[in-house]
Length: 227
Image (cartoon, rainbow, N blue to C red):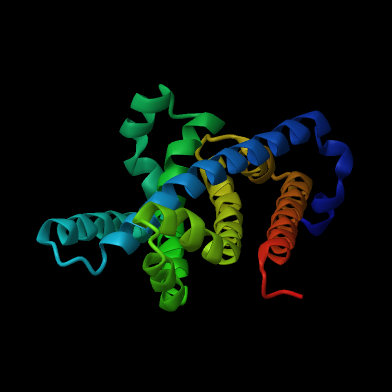
């Protein structure tokens, strides 16, 4: 594959490129939404059960931690293969963009869950104790103090997770999950068309830049420490 093959733009099917770009975008966004919800629940559960004196509660913490550590340790390309039976039972297919969602969510949610837990632990304990001393119950502390105080860190962590998901969608595309990854591999690499690889790469980079910009903008808007 010569360097000149990367700039033969007449060989690009732009309608197909646009469709693949849209697949990458919506798969990433749906994965981010589910990752945010599940990750927050995981992080909250880890935070609330960490220092409990109850053996049963500590057992829950151990089980959740094990789940998080296992799924964080498995390389994504292997996780896709391992989850094929689960994916097929959930979405009734193992190819296409929808088939990528279970593996994307299960790879990213535990990672984000750890970020959520660490964000909660960085909050000044005096703020939490003050809220409890004023008579706030645990749910009030969580929704009125814990989440608002950690929101900038949560948004920043979710931005990092979203960018990782973009890379995962590209890997998933190489085994039939669609999107820019599938297009770059099937129509680019396998057919020795460097231009498709080049264009798909540029679009993925631009999408990552956009996600980072949105994340940084949101953090600045919600962080009370930023003047």
